[in-house]
Amino acid sequence: MSTRPIGIFDSGVGGTSILKEIHALLPNENCIYLADSKNAPYGNKSKNEIIDLSIKNTELLLSRGCKIIVVACNTATTNAIAHLRATYKVSFIGIEPAIKPAALNTQTKTVGILATKGTLSSELFHETSDLYAHNINVIEQDGDGIVPLIESGKLDTSEMKTLLESYINPMIERNIDHLVLGCTHYPYLIPILREILPENVNIIDSGLAVARQTKAVLAKENSLNSSDEEGTVDLFTNGNIAILNSLLDPKFGTSSLEF
Ligand code: DGL
Image (cartoon, rainbow, N blue to C red):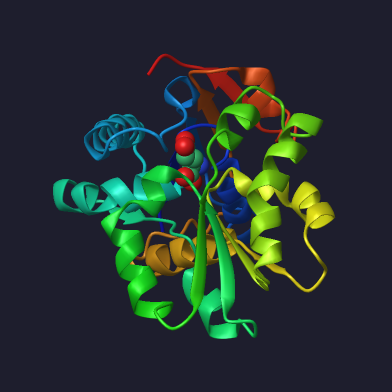
């Protein structure tokens, strides 16, 4: 049993899609979330820069006593998690584009992946893709520009819809039946994506799988919080608090922090 918090970080507000899954599955756990919005997007940065930023976020979460770290960012996971695991004793949970279920279930043998440049160019993504999707067509699309729009509060705008159409329509023309969301900011786009995509296209997002994996690792380490009370959720941002709060239940507390 451990009341110590679960630490979660992302390049910005997107990882709150994972925080919500974790809080829904493990409501008694205390959570600390870091939104490194000042440095978003990570997706166009070099591997070394992404590693340095991931170290900074990890150290801050560890200084606040976190018992496990959830890297709620595909870009940071695919570029930095191996380094983090080799450096710190604490367990890390990561998130990668869920290419395996898409590859296993596709009927048209064609799936689309929307992710950042940093994720699509990573070794880890190539390894997973080669392993599970070598016999199907995978249309990889860099979601350039999406994260900056979300980070500036322009989620539900015509500018966003036009950008998404430019990325998704070529995939529809090639008959995808699965679209893998390879960035934790993208689940917030699902209502717009559903307007663009034909009904037969499944959208795949790995948020729930990350929450389940977090629970399994905490159980194995005997560090689940067995309190009966709802856990606290503390959010820290070095960017715009109002934009972060617009995605969250108002009962959660957000503070500004330099990091
Ligand atoms: N949420 C991050 C991810 O999952 C966004 C990356 C970025 O900041 O470019 O990849």
